[in-house]
Length: 480
Ligand SMILES: [Zn+2]
Image (tube, rainbow, N blue to C red; front, side, top):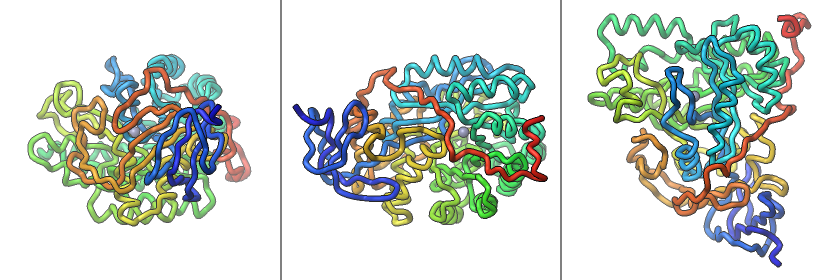
């Protein structure tokens, strides 16, 4: 009788702290041993490969419900396929609230749809309408069901919250023991600039970036941090696009606040001028915050190396370029204001960050693992995920660090008809993905079954507890 169900043999194991040669022995879906010459019923040869924790993508939009009815083009099946193709085994995606509605029914619908998932998954609960019932009754309920993070937008119609509503959400999160994630851009500033641009006849995709310059992201980040400090509620700032914004986070961290920063691959390889391509093509690169300038990429890597930004997720938000459902939903002549925001990136995330980061000598492999798996798993309370050690879930990616690949849309395996990274050369590629001990992708072929993913109910955890430092020692969140 072999000792293990599966042995990953002869590879170089990389965790957030160490790199070492070991076989990985898996039993009942968990890592049971790290050792030498282990024997298993099944063996996966990892000679010459890195063996890393499966990627954890804590910001991606999959099969998100649309207010007009229906859902995103990216379904749980296609989205899971893209994840596994790119070495990702767990995601935290979103459950939406529509203004005037509650959050319990949508969450039940998201749970139902995610029954087709082939990766493990959790949800952030988006709050767009901070009604008394949502704040006092429904938020505690979804948190108790294992949805231990809330998401708020400080911009976007009709999603955005004003400061008062945002404060109420922070207070509700503090009472319930949840993390709050924040999309930081200044709503009124964007609307004012958009009006001016359109009045001046500047409507093409490139003006998307003009409508939301970096100081409006910096201002909203500063404000979000100050309000979270007042409530004493931990927050993560989503998709930091440039160093000026990271600087606000660094200052907060320096003061001892529980403020974390996330960034995404597009802010290391895309630039504002991508939106200035001929015709409608610039729409492919529209996302918010907008990609900045080439000179910003290196500064953002510095913020990553310093640890100011400690999570890199995809913010996958796919809208096809052709057809009438995606980027062209309002026609090809639509002003930038009416073109859906977002870029697909589930499968591209790990290859781009490994290539730009590790292969180009900007970070070491341990840091890569920390940014893409260990840190997001810790910050969002995904127990058993994001590392390689006995007792952890056997979620692994076997990685060829030397393989050179030119990214194409076909390699992405998502439902979207384009990738913004078409033609990008990367060094380093996932050759196999293992989810809880089962080989779910090998040589680009996904062999998981719909429904094999599990819901990750997240319980309370220490990292996101408030600091206890309150203005005037008064905990207003107990009363309002
Ligand atoms: Zn997003």
